[in-house]
Image (cartoon, rainbow, N blue to C red; front, side, top):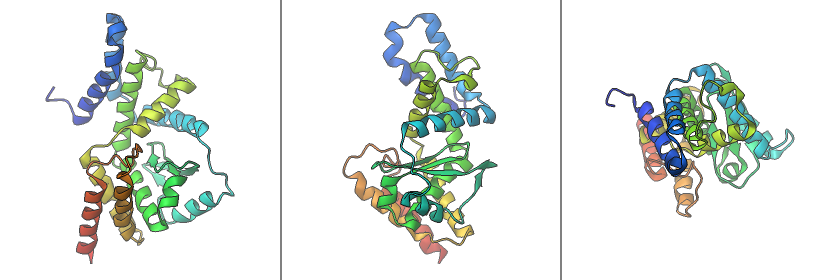
Length: 255
């Protein structure tokens, strides 16, 4: 086991945890297939990840209310992302707003970037730009690929096989939606969160954009998290207050 990469271990653990509730009613053949799904997840190609991201993003778009082009949220988001990347890892960045009170944002490896109106209501433009840069960082640094692998393994095991066996391109609407939900609700590791924070800081620096929003955005998320929200963006490791302090330290060192 010590020869496996960290992502491989996390995928196997996710698969095992997701399958626990079904083990009592599963036969040996089903469990073998489920276990194979975890290993299958580790070997997914970039093309597989992009295909699953396309389908998962499309499914999530159907499940949520997207702000129309003439919405004040869409207009504002378009202004906020001016000067931000138009592509990530050679995938065109596709920015949209979900009309919901939830405070969240996420990005998939195919360039699908979604910002919730609840987050936009909470943040000013500089803060919002910092959060978006953070989500882009997860994609650029390969974290989103690993997160999709983990989500795939958990989803396949829960259904005892569904998406295993090389049928990535044939996910049903419900499977794609389930995969998208698991991706969005999964957590990144502490080191990945910190790396994405630093990516956003460097991105804003490179593009000569205000970086103070990275500090105040995490301060706002830390204050909001005291209310016990279940949003994935608030389930931060390290805590949002620590991340705000780390960004403040970098900001002071850059002066």
